[in-house]
Length: 366
Image (cartoon, rainbow, N blue to C red; front, side, top):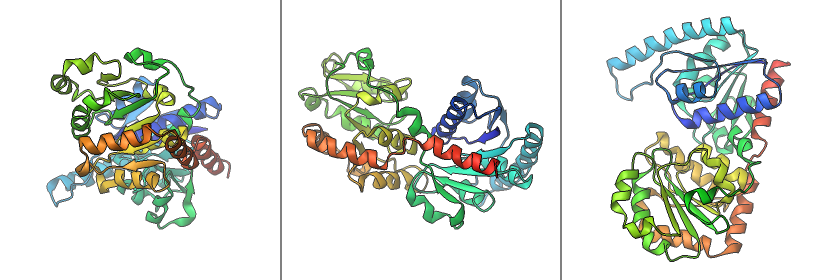
């Protein structure tokens, strides 16, 4: 296939797209691939670093209040459709897939207007505004949470595929990477991680809990996020920085590699994280970000917690005592860990990329 992929703005839109491309290459199903994003978006760096052909268009989101900026948004959207049509005509794709973000709105719509088969992939339990718009035009709507189905009126187009990122991590085996962080490779480990930028409320709760974590029979890998690392280090007693039971890091490159060695994850409930966690069957405690659009992280977390695969702590209710109690209740009971792990695997989709590929090939070979 010749395929155009478009998605941007956040890692949640980009990493599933990259996982799909990787799997298409593994199965030798790509003749050529082009990724269309924005120059300012995170996708610019990620896609270019992966050596994938990359072209850009300029778009921006609507402001919630009436403003002149929205006039510019409409003008940019119309001009981005014209540029997208030019890109599509030059590349001659067999199919175009959008994975979310404003950029894919113009690209996927342009492909539809040129009678190219189109698919959108919605990673979250709450559908994004771009995907809701595109659903009226595309051939198929792939979803990763069953709850998202209710938000699209075109029911016949919907197909549950899961998130391609799940398949990318499912075959990673336990390894000794924990040794790199001065932790024991054979000791039960909790990883606490507030996302790539980190989360100040989570970090603060952990700082206040370190004295108790130091005395447990499990170890803690505390990933602060690069933005917060220096301030966190200043706030911590040096004895915890030298503790055999605690490791404090700003970030971990290629983090999925260490997931099979983690017994419990505490962190945000982004769609990519949930895809990885459930594919591997890792128990989780979610502290959803209340600052994301439509509070979708809370809905994501509820989807996992309602089947007994995770616990949910609203950020407003997060305290040192609450954090320690929830972590300790899970880590001190092997039966609870096993039950949560089994429940997690039940909702995981370890063949998600292949499911999405089946949708794409089905349209191309129609």
